[in-house]
Image: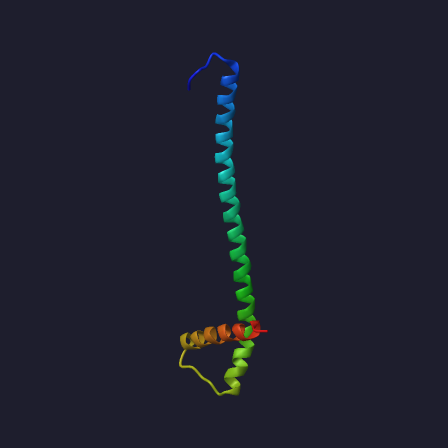
Length: 95
């Protein structure tokens, strides 16, 4: 760093350096806040999906009973349930 003999010049150099550090700190703060926001948004959305799948389980069982559907194993049952839950959510969202 250069040392100037004129006092106002020295002050302006220090202010610019301080503002640069402040700018970097604000950028890091914005990035941190963004990641916190994304985390909470993800948690909120996953909670909605969980609630909708819990509500769809009895409807799927009733649908299987009404249409006499049976599946070979739990993997196929779970796959068909996911398809059913997606379609049910699509239907319920429509106005």
